[in-house]
Length: 84
Image (spheres, rainbow, N blue to C red):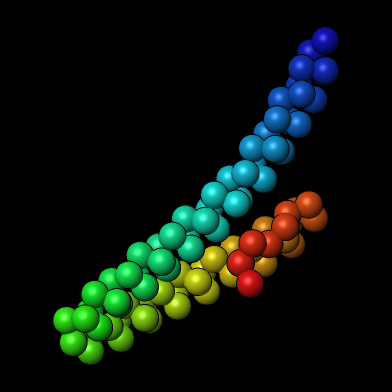
């Protein structure tokens, strides 16, 4: 019974880790979208420096999301990418 319970815990953990991988990538993309929104506000205020910085940060968060997805796919063959 203990072995069966352990097996079920590992199965549950496997499912949870898959969700955590997706949540991580979604968080990175959320951060990118936040910086895009800040860039739009900077554009409206004609703040070129702020707009350039926001674009740089948005690109940084997308790069982090893509890197995370590459690593998640490398370690988990069942992981499906959501960032293109």
